[in-house]
Length: 401
Length: 136
Image 1: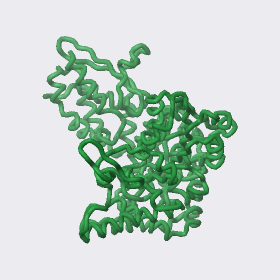
Image 2 (image 1 turned 120 degrees about the vertical axis):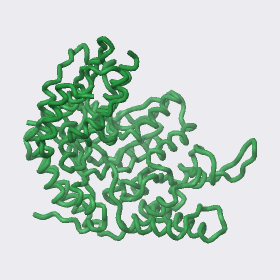
Image 3 (image 1 turned 180 degrees about the horizontal axis):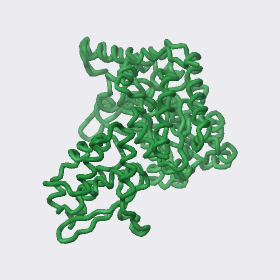
Image 4 (image 1 turned 30 degrees about the horizontal axis):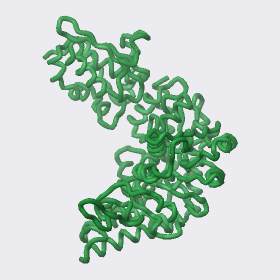
């Protein structure tokens, strides 16, 4: 049965890559961009770039309006209760670092920070380093064989000393949804701050931060078909105000004297320096484009793609799927074949997938694997992409014996 | 400078390969020529950082000329390491410092294996070779 994406043509890069013999199956690393984004960004630069928030002239007014419109669109996208709960950063990684530094004063030696065993380095290292700076304990929730945080163990590990829970919504290696509702409830019951890494989750389905009940939600624009150099930090208003100012300079300052200064409240007070204005405006266009799609049709398409991917992998002898993927991506290893060899020969055949440890080295240590191959899908992928991938996989395996 | 005999043979065989499949099969054949390292040589000090798979490299000097041995878990990389070693073994530190290895792999039809986005580590191995020879 043909599995055709009706949105493929909205992403010009897909046909350009196809003409070069490239099949793009690495969208969990970064996604291709819709024409709507390119048009908007081109239009912005072409009609006059300007800095935001600080000039009386027309170009600045125009840029500021477009910039703030994205804040509004993003707030609606996440169902935040107000626009000023959205902070723009220079990437998701920076957002986690902002949290780890901004919340530092909330913690005392002996407090516990809870993460899971499948965190991306961006949601691990800032907390690990914070724990080292402040003498905190980093508690790691184990995962089960399916690739989800084990709730029973988690309920024993989240306790009165827990001050923060930082957890991924959708694993970037296993493609498994994490039991956020239950985990957030556990953390809230002990008064802990909750942080959700939505970098992968945001790309697959709409999520309501108020319904989730998290304090902070972080995602990155470029994985959500938007421009690079831009991260989004949602923070519940009262929690956002707990954050200490972290980076200084630019428009985050309200009044500066030589000896001291005072600063704006969030979000402005947390956005030091000139923001990535073009990228923010571009993300607005992407969200506008995505908002116009039939979300249910996208979900069905992605789910059919993933089924076909997992089926094809499970059919092949010697292929071991990691965990039980539920969305968008699957990682696998082949018995007796080094993933670097497989990746090399897939690359030779124009298959763009990722090999290695996908910025989650501790997860691979717990799986006792040196790495794996990850195939990740987006709404523009087709059944034909998977056909090419499987043909290339079979050819590579034949050579590697 | 004339090519060492083993390198000249490699050049002839790889230049005749038509397409990725033949090159891959050749690389695996070449990998089998790689002289194995002892377990004791596969130690942390000899491990080359920056490779997707584990790679170990040793270098020894004899009469001012350098000889290398290497090991890897990945078969294609073993082939690439053989090609690298066959080209550089018996060179002096000065010769190694100025040798154009990009050209060498390009001539073999393997230029993409050296591209910066590849994390196979071939460039890291070369840097380690040069570092070893400079320390003397």
